Length: 438
Ligand code: XLS
Ligand code: CA
Ligand code: CA
Image (cartoon, rainbow, N blue to C red; front, side, top):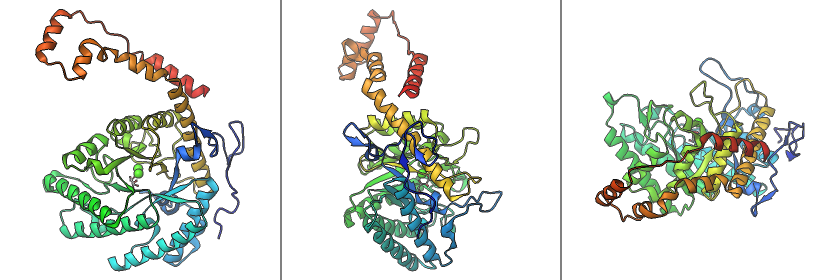
């Protein structure tokens, strides 16, 4: 059954098109540097926002009109949503989708029943995959929504909850493997705390590491070769999340000897909630060789919470793609639109407009970033800025051939220091020129 009946396949019409149902910058088949844009950008639809979110907010009930909601039986509804997912991905030329276990299949009365329901929907998804090019970018488990997770999952004070979460993640890993998922994501959910007055932080963080170690072992056991990703977020739902930002996660993984098994899934809105730019988080993942995947969205600077809006800010998409290309581009990762339409955009067609806007913003960002890197002006500037480390005393520092004695001897003879301008404004103007002209 078709749910987006009035919508055909969305095509590239170029920057001058006035058709709102066409791509202006995203030309899926255009080959750049030996790969099509489709292969470079690896777009993905987030099942939870697109097929589960209904416009509910703390002040009001659902507003979204969703044709698949006509299905009354929960299993039929789950199947209808999966059909709508494949239809939308295909029409938008989006090659991937992502889900939490509980997005695609409702929870049963017991864990056993939940497993069985999930199996049913996974079988149905496999059927749909037979005639569709759409694939699974990543799967994950929702170990935060149910009341049992009130005090967290792997970091709960209650060992029975730890065990239940393990059982849930075990199954989510199995179905991700079964559906050919290229990655498996761990987002901290309620892994954090509200007050230290009732919290054993050491036990909680040790347990989180124990949980992740068990997941690594289980992946090996079942032969899941997809990439494990951790998604940092500083707050929401808990006041303090253990996976606060990229730096915290990298430090955590290294402390527990888990860093070889994980990369990062960086979300734009989480970066800004942590007081960082999106680019900063991506750069940190890149320089630590942990760049994995992206949750593409944006927050609202005036609101300051996790609004998960569709990404339209081309400065951010340009700099995000700049980092992505510098990291060597995506391998197993991609650009997952972890974004939801605003409550006032309640018609199904708004989901189409929203994805087009995000895809075009990233396509434009990608093209601009590619041009910036090909021309190499920024990289050349940076290289020159650090030239003092390639000769003389700088070279000795970098090569480990300097110490405080040799450096003080050198400084005593060279204490009339000359610095060069950082040229920030000139570089920002150059960035504008690239964005406006490429
Ligand atoms: C919530 C997160 C979540 C993860 C997947 O803020 O973005 O949706 O991406 O669990
Ligand atoms: Ca996310
Ligand atoms: Ca978010």
